[in-house]
Length: 354
Ligand SMILES: Cc1ncc(COP(=O)(O)O)c(C=O)c1O
Image 1 (spheres, rainbow, N blue to C red):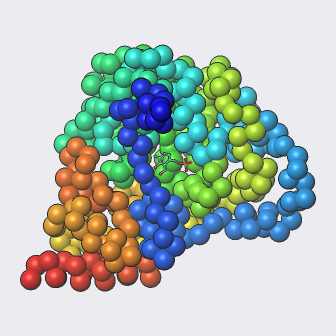
Image 2: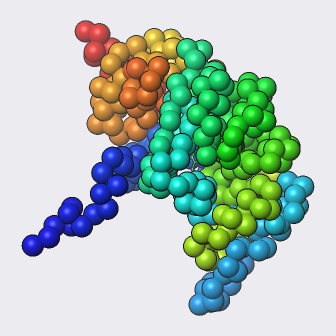
């Protein structure tokens, strides 16, 4: 009898899907960079008036109303916007659309692991170019591959910092293929690469409602690029990819910019609370332009992450990344959550040193 393993596509063998989910509701989840300060209240307002009885109807095929709203927000036309079921879907379709088997897909490393995953899924030759020791971009090595797709996360996850603008601009200017600039955390850094992306012939600016908007559970992401690129992406996208409620909620969320400023300010305040306390506990803490901190643990990183899990606190182990031995990534949340983390750390580190 044939096994499922034998039926599985042979090309999936080398695919290592990063796993994020931690299902325990009682855990303090400081591991996935969601907005722990809550959901954009616009979503709750939409829920009160939304016509759920109309959910028998399909949404618009390409989420036209949301594309219009995004276009007006960012000063582009709706033809230059595509929305996805999370920005993850856009990473998927970008590879699906542009990669022939064996084409180079270039990313810096360490960076967000899903670029590599989708590249490999669609049979790219993924080339990971190590950041310099100071965690800056090695622009020469990124450009030398003449890659079909080059993905740059700005600011970068998990290193938490913005790359120098001139480096990103140079990649945008000189890359042979498509440059995907992922600005998932731009609300926190206050940066914006969109003008440079739109100045380039082959580039894409990727955004998400999962971070500062606090809507990770609704799965809404989008990309802005020249119409020719958007048309190509649309040609491989699942129709009706975004559900009607998520679309309505995202439209309203964009009207509530003041909440974004508030949540970003609170994140920065709590980030400043956490960083010196981690330093006191012996961590090396890196500067951050994001809603998370990258830190080097004073002890074995993976063992610390696992001990914290046992205590009900999840943080991200970055040990397997180049340059980040014993490093961890901690999402910023409200102070009571951070105090739980600090208490557990104090306890674990004092037990460990006895
Ligand atoms: C850099 C980066 N891009 C994209 C995503 C995925 O976002 P979404 O929830 O929109 O799929 C994440 C999520 O952690 C991320 O860190």
